[in-house]
Amino acid sequence: MIIKVCAVGMAAVIMTALLKGYRSELVPLIGIGAALIIGSVIVWDLYDLIEVIKDVADKTDISSSYIAVMIKMLGIAYISEIATSMCRDSGNNMIAGQIEIFAKISMLSVSVPVIKTLINTIMECL
Image 1 (cartoon, helix red, strand yellow):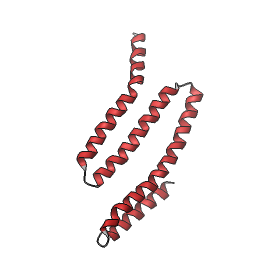
Image 2 (spheres, rainbow, N blue to C red; image 1 turned 135 degrees about the horizontal axis):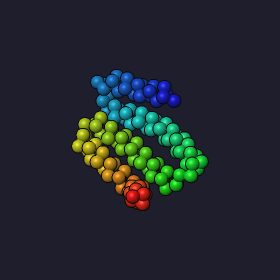
Image 3 (cartoon, rainbow, N blue to C red; image 1 turned 90 degrees about the vertical axis):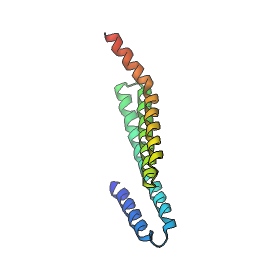
């Protein structure tokens, strides 16, 4: 799978390099197309990963709420990384930074129930 993803990425880079001087208006479209193709591969791999995580959780009696938090945080991390990379590639570093900050705050807010449970467990042990 990684070979296919790398091939798509390299093909897009070569096509954009070749077209940059002749048809520069097509360069962003090639980048978007490559991102969509690679993104679809990522989604399928994430689906398989989520199924494995759910299977492990079922076998180990881990609460489904913890698994949901993990999956949400994983989604936030991947989506924000893709968005910030696209922003940086287009020269919008300030927007990329704001997306990173919002992603961190989102991850923190999603994890609040787990943090509360952890603190309560620690307090009970003391």
